Amino acid sequence: MKNTVERYHLLWRKAIPYTREGTHYHYLQKIMVFVFTCLCLASCGQIQFEDVSSMPTYSSVIGKQFRAKEEICALGITSDRNYAKRVDYIVLFLVNGVCFSGPEVVTREKLDRGYIFKVVKIFKDRYFLSSEMAYVVEAVDSNKFKGQEVRIRLTGDIHDRNYGLDESIYSLEESAR
Image 1 (cartoon, rainbow, N blue to C red):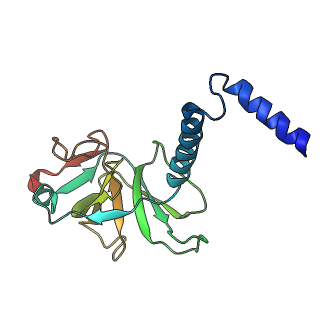
Image 2 (cartoon, rainbow, N blue to C red; image 1 turned 90 degrees about the horizontal axis):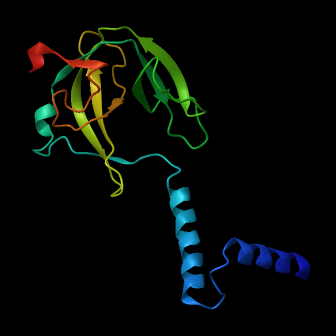
Image 3 (spheres, rainbow, N blue to C red; image 1 turned 90 degrees about the vertical axis):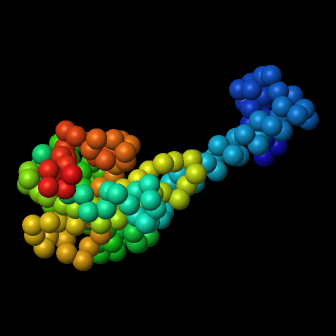
């Protein structure tokens, strides 16, 4: 056992040759490794959103209607830690774009080009290091996903010409301008 500990200590000293045990740098280095590990572990998890729809900065977007220029994919996501086969919310993605999969994806459905939806809520993440935002939308011309929370993540600034949505995928409906 002692030899293993000594070998580990020697490997550590060779990897970081400029720190001597007992110095401030040595302790600072250990603290930095601990903080980095905690940050990595903290990033694994679901983003917690808060509703900012009533804030004056964002309230002008509520009711805006958008049309999908491309075929999009609706992924039904579960928030259950044991990955229960129930849909807690739906996320819209470009079919040919970067998508995700895993045990949290319960359903997958394609939506045709021309799908029209309107913004009913705006979510912003609660973490101070990130600025993730998402629209909660509902279909305008159909009862598809009625009663379910459908989210679209913003790729741009909410105050730009297309209100943060990718212009190559979504277009603002003229009647909603």
